[in-house]
Length: 382
Image 1 (cartoon, rainbow, N blue to C red):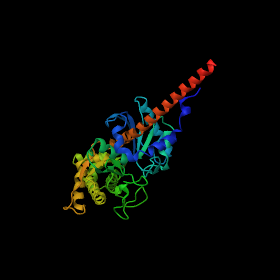
Image 2 (image 1 turned 135 degrees about the vertical axis):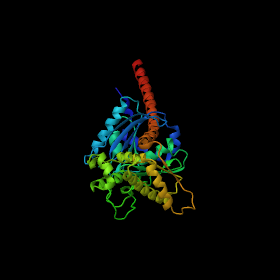
Image 3 (image 1 turned 135 degrees about the horizontal axis):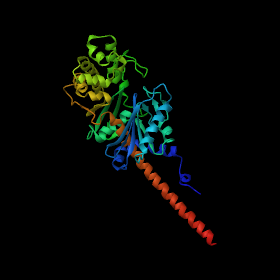
Image 4 (image 1 turned 45 degrees about the vertical axis):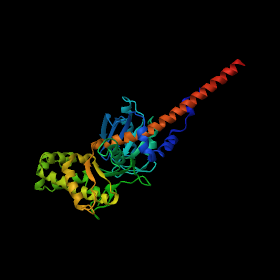
């Protein structure tokens, strides 16, 4: 007996054809995308977050796990993603999966070309996961996904020219103009964290020295705190006592918490990170001239302890200051979940096209079955 699968094209080829058309039609498509639940995955250097998101950007359920050690094979991370999706699919009717990956994603949004904090090198992430999951898969850079979420549901609503800065383990970035994410010719636009701001400075995981994220990121914050604690600096006594001398336990959220409680060193470290953030934003304003900078990622939880110094440094370093409009700098409303929400929402664009294609294939199959039944009935009467 013939089956439905016999009349379908290979899954990989269908996805490739559909995904090549997504980028240029995002603004129009999101208005007509199906209002169905999708899964968003946010992959960072330290965590993998997965959630089921509805059409209004509401998170219905969320799971989180640590990112497998980067020395392991890429398959280990892919196994983790697949397990999270299958777990969520047991309780939700999932129609598509969107993945926001911390790395460079090619223009076709299939391969992760390079991930500084993971072991992915030219990794065909979309195709690998598409082979394992029974729903359409879309892959994008995590900062692109976060910018899309903030434009759709958060701090960037109503903005025509938006730049997203995500502060986490490193620095990610994204550009959104007129309702479209600007990915560049090769898909790797917005990697602001690897702009060199200090020639010959700290070594970065990308291989260069002096990258912006080495001075304004979660890694930079923790590095500075641990160095002061390891040197037994008098200003670090508070945090040394807090971790009972276990310097390796110092973390970004801990520094933020102590800063809120008034620890002078932690406040100063966040001010330093914020000042470097403002310098980088001023450079981006000179190049891109957006109307709004949205600051997201885990480090943004420090709020005005970080963003206040960033605004001050931005005004001091902005070219043409005093004679030009200034972009506003605001904290992301969706917080560290923006990348997950944005990836899920972008996946709805693919879900719509696949639902239409599936409906047409089903209709063709039904017509074929009716034709075959008529032929059999005619032959039986002869």
